[in-house]
Length: 254
Image (tube, rainbow, N blue to C red; front, side, top):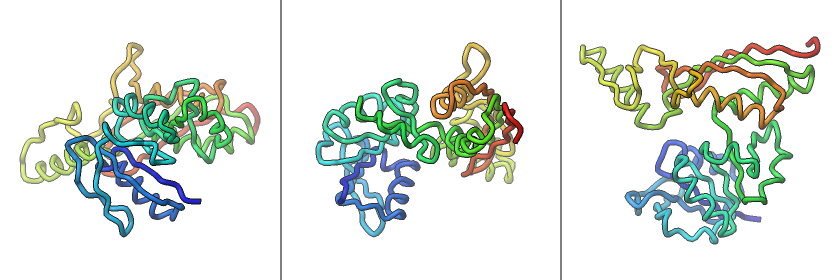
């Protein structure tokens, strides 16, 4: 059986990576559609040995597809995902918009695949934050073995997590410093080259950033609401690849 698949946000870093992985995994895909904003209509993106021309999200007919992968940010998902779901596509959303919706399963396949059965309430499945995803994959077998009581995690997140413009800023600043050109922060609040910034997403009233809050809330939803977790999330001058230092306290010896 073949599936028709649409990737929304196909011109972005994440959308292009989705297309590359879909091809790499050799999934049974019939038609593939690259969807983007009106400004990108006609722009070409690669899908294996095929070239796809971008179509306009506002006018695209999602009844043509079985699965719609959204990788264009929360504002786009808020408007576009329900429309795609209503047209019959199963939406898999990469943004933060639906993650804490009680009627939308938050899925990491290696951890809680069985929870996907709840997708039919809204025809939407949410992906967690990237740092949450890699954390819960490590925690799941440990939780099964000895029951996790408490987690303290520090993340060291690459600029790719903030998109292409952020990666470009790291490159430009790094190059500029070597020729005595003072860096001007635009994407980040501070210089990112040769620096670390403990500020990802917005600050909340309690002093935590929203990224740190997300890790706590999402881990509880995916793994176990009884787990206590605190996170410190730091942006580091790395192009691709998040790292984490994790301290775990258990209820039973392990």
